[in-house]
Image 1 (cartoon, rainbow, N blue to C red):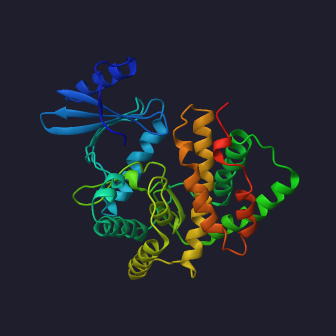
Image 2 (cartoon, rainbow, N blue to C red):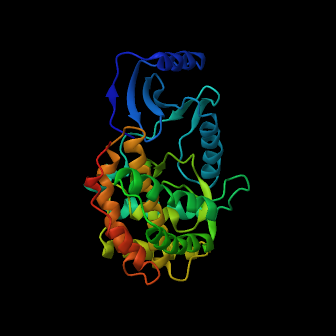
Image 3 (cartoon, rainbow, N blue to C red):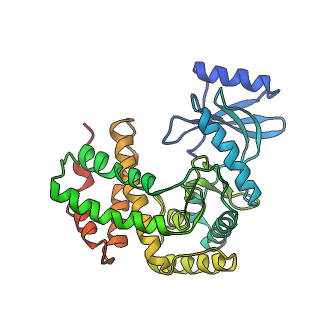
Length: 334
């Protein structure tokens, strides 16, 4: 979550939140804005006589609030540290949550030894994957995977770069991305957090505290590991990453989790799908939602993609197709 900024007054939605808190018997001594995220959700930290609490304000997001409640139960059953829900009104879009603190992995990994932090994150991931996925969780199937991939040509290539691909471009695109869809579809299925990255992991006791899990799916086993190791805001060099892949492999096998025979190749292809999706989302945030800050990280993702696809015989042409695109700086907001 973003840094805390004190606020002096509330908009009408904020006034509704205060009324709801009072109805729950919560009379905060101070309320601080914690900003928002890529969605239209907002977060507030409350100072109360019983300690701090966090309010999630998710207007018109009944389904999101319900998903948060249900997925939280799944993760708690897997012995993960997820925030306690002290009160909730999904119809109103308010949730009163345990405060997991304000120190996320992004900051901690810059200042503290990585070994214990990443060990805890991978151990928690294996505990989640060891749990049988519930039948009601949505499936991260081939159709959903392909739909996410479409964000890259639709928003990054056409909208951000201003390029209208020709038939040859589309043919190469579909041939290359079909390999990614095939790879992800054939992996064993586990509960997937879907954004298991350093900004969603909090330094806490027990460690890590895990947030922003409401979009969880049943999906490919290496997806969350790829999200953790190849983050939007944090990178490991290949040699260090290899050490953590080996650690994950050992822990997953001990937990009898079925892994791809070529784990590194599976991570590369799965991460490539995620990174293409994220580039499309960042471009959409820039041009549709007027949030240009995210697209500044495009170069990191383009670098990941060349590493992930360039040495893969079945994806090499896709890597060239992406490398031949203009610099992301050329796609200034319209």
